[in-house]
Length: 544
Image 1 (cartoon, rainbow, N blue to C red):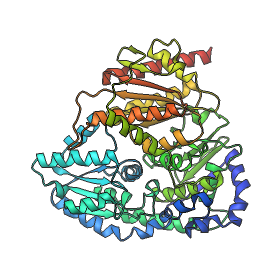
Image 2: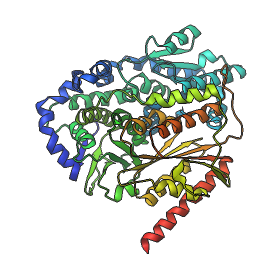
Image 3: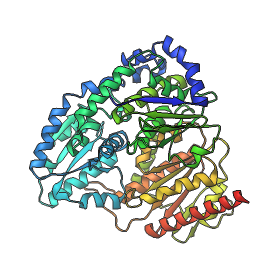
Image 4: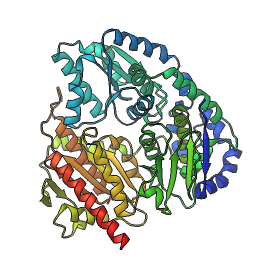
């Protein structure tokens, strides 16, 4: 197994000292691995009883390896060298991290943006096979992605059935329909594993294995990690991380996860969903903030922030106050963080395996798709940016004034959530506004690409403490894209998803500033310049 190490200071160390004796006395580690569904209270028992399969996923998934590798070799022999994963949330985040860290190409399509979908379909279609991943098979994004690829294959004279691989729960509607349709292969995952805990199941292994990752070594490492975590020992790093996540007093409910030399590509994005969706409910929880080691949140020392640095095994790390450093290989880290999240759930007094508030935005989006209402009139337009907001906008008349008005809603315990509903690959640089807004506001800032964050931090935004302030950015497309045999387009779908989420957040009393970029490229440039200007003004004010 890769070297696993952990160090902590300040509140994280104190939390460990405070909670470890009870965790050891209650045999929490061995009871988790024994699938004791009573650990999270009576209200959680029914859900927990069918969601603890992840503790043995590394061993249960071993029989999948041979079938995956056999299919990979067969596809290669047919000239298929590109794998596209159509999936959302837990079905896409883990494979993206696994493939990225291994340096293996895997195209992850976790968007309904017409331009991003079009680009994925247009790229080397003759060399492409798709993996459609969905536990239930009812996920609208994934179903739409499958439909557009199936049509594209057929239109290109390619046998679509030979290029479609399915990963789903046994007996799901997708499972049944796919077998009847005669798709190339159908892999069933363990139904007793929730999506965000599914990295070591078929959901993580199939797309990565087909793309070329050494999934046997990955599983072997995870099995070794599980053996170490399954010990009621004061040296159990999973228990230590669990106390840092959910046991600080008072609770530091903003967890800044910073890549600081671990070599694991995108791990914080995966951990973000795991933690936010597992803990953000019943008005409590901890919010993961994906940031860099020198980002404002990692250096300002706010009393509600804990910094966790992902470091290399041999790194000589000098920790600041209230920080954690953790090192380990990817499979090891995934096991540790899943285990620690379950421990944090117990300390927080919540069920870490449900997601009661995720469905609200889906219902609202579906209602808007069915009703097809006219867009809400803009408060005003500034250049390429249409501005929509609540009474808190006051007399703002420019986009810059609107953003400033939103930031003024931030209090000492609040966070800002930036939600961008457009092509995350073509406009990846837009994420740079996150650090600048954190510097301007002095508060933690999360950045999510829509609609994928709806399957991730979306649970915390609605079910966690009412401390979020929201900046939603949508963008017009140069051309829309029809969804075969559906009465709506991709453009209409992503618009409804954004509007539906804004509606639910507003109904929860959260401030939401909606900026629509009527011209995508020009609007992105204008908004980036706007934020940079605000950051410059804030820096000048601080210096003076």
